[in-house]
Length: 62
Image (cartoon, rainbow, N blue to C red; front, side, top):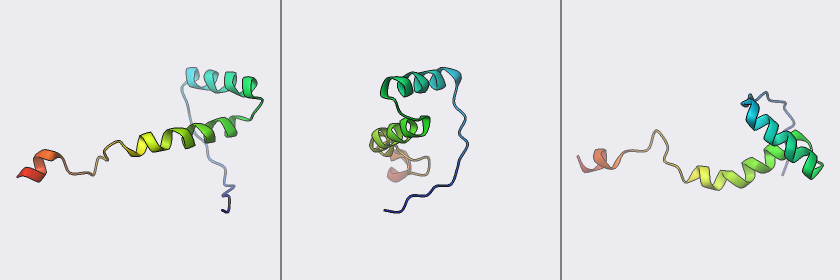
């Protein structure tokens, strides 16, 4: 699988940055690695959430 190396800017609240930095030190990894692992771990749970574009149950019944 080819890797896309484009740089992105993402803004996090300070408490989240501090948590990421704490894990950077603990795991001896980069910020990018920590954030990428967080996304990989959380993505299946996020995909379970309904989309704003998904029809509501009420709309289906009408």
